[in-house]
Length: 636
Image (tube, rainbow, N blue to C red):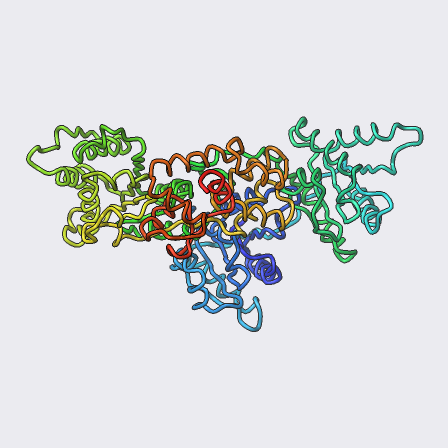
């Protein structure tokens, strides 16, 4: 277990190594991915496990790291698991940090940020150690030491013959691994007269580890593809053995499709020249001492709907930190807005889990589960909520006994919440209401929303009612002002507002890595991004299709807009929505024909449905290339 996890961007690794060395000299054990992650391991799994185990997270804040998806992911997970933060500024001012990453700043607001002085990282180490001690993160007194090498393993080296410097590196590894009492095999060790292909296959299948040397000469070599494929197949049959330890030989370019499918998701060692010999040997022997876990099959969950908490395919966005901060503060009302299939439910699930971890009671009410009978009147709606809340909190409460006929529905529900819930809970309550749009067009919708607004006001007018213990999270897609005309009756202009945006190109690139890179190059990623436009559902569904079919981006582009294609159900649903709203269908036709003669209200509705993008009715356009193509085919 490492006491200190260091989060940083790769370009800052020199500074990280200096800080880590100083902390280890003070008795702390440290983890940072560039040194301690072993070839063959999965980045997300390793970092999540290490954050879970550490006591404090040191974040190196630089002009490079401020835009890092990986650093943001690590910060969010650290915050959700209640870790102490040690923010260190490198080449940015505190004001710039606060301006560019308010989400990071809010999460780490309780931690004082220090700055690396001109004299270098050594000058800041006493302050870091003193800060850690103040947070009761004490040295463990266990300096890092190399574990004894595991001897007598069978190791197969794979390479391309007559390629240089591949063969020189091969000889170096052979010599050093033999010194450690391992058994080493490569194809030049085949005895005369042996059926060489069968011998190589037997050696690979019975090996403990296989080390492929990947260079510009071997990255598309058919023989190496076959050998790596044999190792991968054997590992499925032998519970992870042989484990693959990729070594890139002065080459970081793309691999062939066959090699990339197996190796791209694995951490590799990089060798530039003989000056990297000792570093490479240390990384390889570390991997032999602590074998990487067998690669797990990617857990694909049907795109759409909430993503399980344990999935490695969830994309952390700035909104995760905004929501985490609101939960921490105990805000009265938190508003989460986004069109359909933007990841609202997944975001809420993680925020609620954070609340549970910190000791709050949690209720999740999905209004999609209510029937038309439940939604018929305000009374029936509130009584359905009473039943849902009572069940989740395991309260002995019967609506019939607390519902007074002479009181309004709002008064009855407020009385229930105050006397039967808040008064009986000794902990804060976070209540999330999903699919709140179902209320907006009801006759009593404004009445219900006005009660939610009252909860906000009650913190001041009824301090004894424990209203400061309630955080109400309202999740919705449609602009509420289209339905609630009186702003004084709306909770949507007083709560903490969080709006979900489409994935950025960087986030899609990161997610592609998690799917083992079915998109093989930066150009393919840009084509895919143009096709789906960062739409979270389309991105996840498209990557799943590419991974499962192994068909490539060109094939996906050809079938994407077909009714029987991978997005067919999603696209047909769009036509159903428009067929039920003829005014919106006409607005879409106007946009597709380049006229853009639509009202601001139609623009807002189309954007809420996730069909159009833009800042106003004047610059409205289809949200992505896929939507434009499909809608032109059916409506143009």
